[in-house]
Image (cartoon, rainbow, N blue to C red; front, side):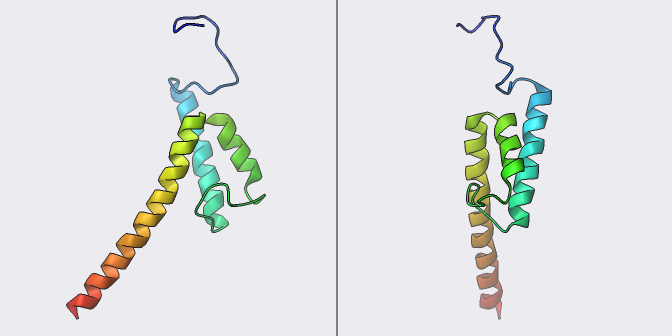
Length: 95
């Protein structure tokens, strides 16, 4: 199968479709909201708590996007912790 083949797999999400991208983002947001409610930072560590939303997330998003979103979530949480700590240190130093 080449770049211009007419076969189209309906099982895989099509990242070029606006509707499919939006579906992916919506399912990611729902899954991450479930993780937040379960107080889980790293996706995959929630056990069975968010099984339904995780399944939808994995069905609606490409594997590479899932990897990116998951890594980005963990990194953002780490950065937030560092920023909070820096702010606290700056306030303490001013006193």
